[in-house]
Amino acid sequence: MEDLSVNNTNNNSCADRINESLSSLNAELTLMMENPNHDDYFDEPALSIDSYQLTSICLSYGGPSSYLEVKHQGADIVSVTYRFSDWYDTATREVSEWEPAYRYAVNVIESLDQ
Image (cartoon, rainbow, N blue to C red):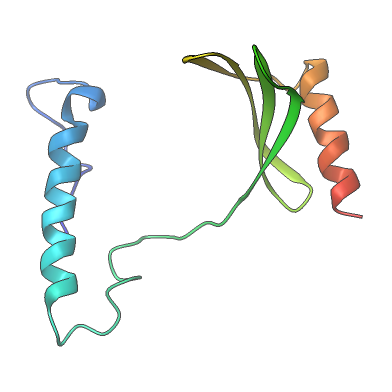
């Protein structure tokens, strides 16, 4: 696999470089997966594999709708995102730990873990 940690000398942002990086990764993975002698291609390129649950708490639906999306491992919260949608438009924002919406999400997730 290529070393993606090398400093980019032309100072482009990651947003500028992501399409090229993904294209390169896809090409490398295609070659690896098409190799009939390679038995463990699913975990070879990964440095680690983390598994999370995503729980969606619907607060309103229709126009507009709103949700809290909670990324967690068991009762341990990783992040809470507020999603607000109205017709063909959606916005999301991370919810801070000090906000009541975050505390509400914690309570919901803890009740599911019991």
